Length: 69
Image (cartoon, rainbow, N blue to C red; front, side, top):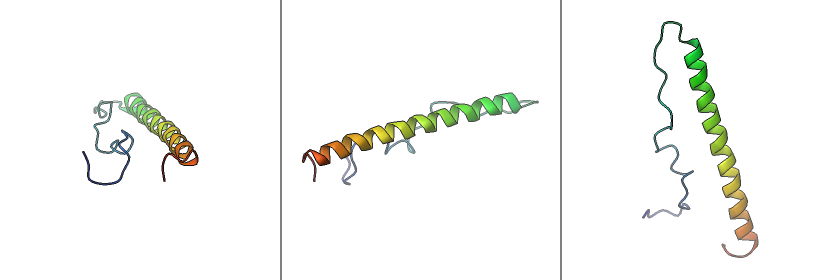
């Protein structure tokens, strides 16, 4: 358990967790593979953003309901 006051949420640990995709490998033409890697990373960031918005909405509803101060 952590001693700080952050909520225990995988979002907060995202920067500490390994990315769910391999780094791009160097290839002769490189471009298609690099673009695919960037697309994967962008999809991952978009997913994290959606999860954080969802977590924020849940937190906000708990605060409004008086469950958290």
